[in-house]
Image 1 (cartoon, rainbow, N blue to C red):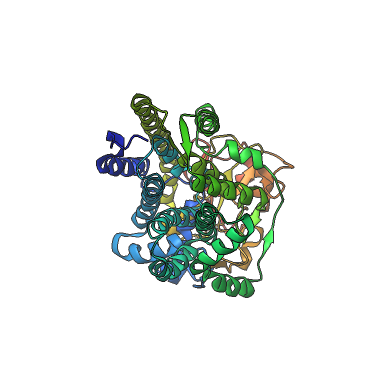
Image 2: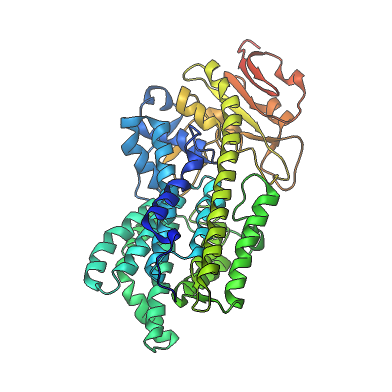
Length: 504
């Protein structure tokens, strides 16, 4: 193998890549991730700054659950910089940690940054982050860096054990599935080492499991959490498994996103076919473990939906960083491959930045309505959705959470979770419009989205004696007569804010 240090392997290039990875998040005041506004609403209740109003509708109770990553960061940062800047800082840190973790693991395994690592970097913005699973994304980013440290300390078992008892707990606290991912990474690495010593699969697996015992302490926390909440595994087996493998980079433009992910899968295929490409048996084994976990995992796990989808990017990521140029690959071809990876990374980063800028514009336009919402408004919001979801979704469905955060208004988008929810909605008089998904409305009945109401049905059934304002966010066509008795306060296109007159 050529041991020369190429320009793409130098520390300056690595640092620049980590900085480039956060570029899409610099412009938007709020990272335009689908679920994030709902989280921001919860953070406002958590901080207690508007408790005089919000206590009538919400109760926040701290609990020891494996789903607290960004919550804890925001709790620490928000009193210093404000709520929304704290959230933005946490998401930026998540993207940077993920990028640095990918490069660090690559260096620990291969001894240098490989050209394939540059192709893997755009996976920091894979579909789970785009959907707004911020606690999970932070936990996985922490897990990658912890795994790199695990590899670095391979010969110092006592020191590693002492460090990884608290590190495993930190990752678990961020999100339980991130801790599970760290366990798969470490087990795969230890199993590969045991196999290299000549041990059989069963004996090697037993010894690998023993070596990973420092990571097992959160099992006690997991038992306490699940016993306390009564949750467990539910969901559908094998649903949409192939679809998630194709939508790993889903953002806005279907052709661009599909072409990008197909390119990455083609590279993985090439790695098995081209003799000029070598592979790390360790990381290939880790990729195989994630593939098995992905196939076995149900759709819902520990109250987290899309549980299986979240692992799909990790299968592809480890398959990519397992590859390296072999002895037969010339320095010129390595240069070309690295340049192609850097161009792909730059193109995906630029595309994500443009996409986020466009989402930010649409959010800013809709959020202008909040200038006309009085503090403490009993606000009901209806957001237009489609029965068949387009590739590039509007990401407006949880904007009510921003009304909660900025105006201390009631928001009917908070989702109830039976095991990990710190926030509970106590506003019983809101009826069917108390929680998610009551804020999402369709143009008509839809079998696929049977929980969602047609917009006309929602407008007819809003309890007008309970709510005092209605916010329509990009709604489908509706009968304007259903707004009788409401005074318009703000309009922009089909969106509008209305005061519900109690006398009517």
